[in-house]
Length: 594
Image (cartoon, rainbow, N blue to C red; front, side, top):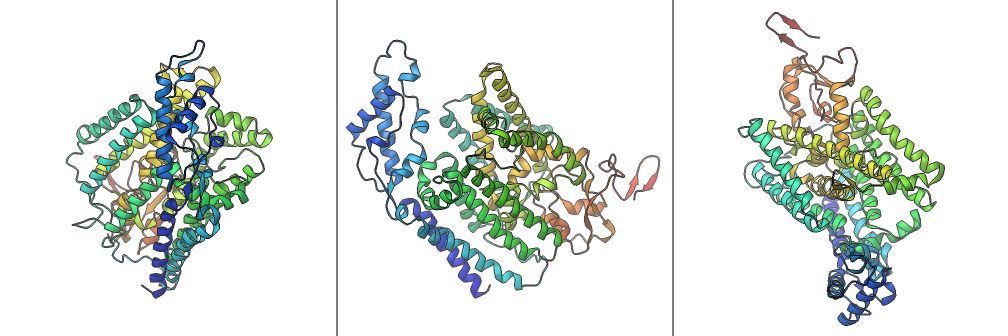
């Protein structure tokens, strides 16, 4: 490791430390004029409770203590209304304060606006001292890699405390804590036990199907780490990322310091203060760009990887971040033009359809564009190029996985058990997305909020909580250092499932193998982020036509013998998944397949 790289690591740690510390630097104060509650009963009860608790015009040292004081006041107001008789002609929940009203009345913007202190006074300075220094440190660490010899070197990835991942027992423990934790929190998040219970039952059924019906209880799970203790730096990194996503999705009140720090950039791009989503979008884009530079250094011997990495960097920067922000500045409908249903599960929600229709010509174009992508573009382009056109060249989730997640690609579980779980789970999520969207559209056109006795708002709220936040964010990204970089893409993404079905049964794309040249080094399987045992296919001379393959091409890039090749061909499109491209033995004949 060079001196510049050691300096880069030091700067990165300092930047992350300052970035984290910013959440506790400012103080908070709120006045009566800041309370924006239109319901007269709720506003009066809260103001009376605030006078009693001394909430107003008092300095709070942190947003934690500030939010605790607001919650205490809210609970007191809630109890006050609970003990009063409901006036004639007034609905029960127009008078009483439901728990869900807390999120409606006390949004993160209120907490941010109540802040004062050094971050509020010097946002750009603190951005440079945190994000800027971490970014500079990352580049210092990456740049010397351009001086090394090109090509892939298996230089101890399974011995690195950052990259060795979790042994299967630790994985089971991590999932055993995370999944019940999300379901339990879902009960309090939605104030409803039904959907968490249904999800728990479905999880139990899938485990039973895989372990007993499909006889996987005797399949040995993959151990991606070496024997002994798992990678401690990876665990620390994973815990930090999981904590970040929990705050981002479910407790944004506590990251208002970051919003304040990003305010100048938000006002310059969209004319308004930064929300947690602007913070996330800007960080997301910066990370893909910086880690994309790392990809250029690591895979500079392979032109396909250079072009593919440049593509995901461009689409994230332009289509996912800059264009939507500029459209907001121009008071136009704003959306990520490359995001496709069902990955963009809110596309057919009533508020989004109404927003696009009311947005004039541009909004109508976006609505039609989104429908064309789903109905025509996805099956057509996937037929010619496989799912790689989206998952490895365009998608933001894939872009983050390919750049930030590249150091962890070797951690994907290649076991038969994992593959069986994968098929049940990802297609189950796709089915859930289809049913949820159908119920949402029924509500939109019929005006009825219930389908077969189920409230459609609860269905889509649960999907957003469980799949949109818990699976894609906390597990899908937070588990990069623990279980690999494509956990979401492999097990959860409904669009990947849709693309995969087309690729598996009707696509020209495949990875061809020249089994006679394979030396069984295992590089291809090691670096496959989707858990495919590529070496097994290569040894048998069998083309790789798997629904899960995202066509990243890394297996081909790391093969020292040129055994693997990404191709598009239609001559055998109806039979390529049935026969191996080697000696094929049947009861009647022995045939050499070409």
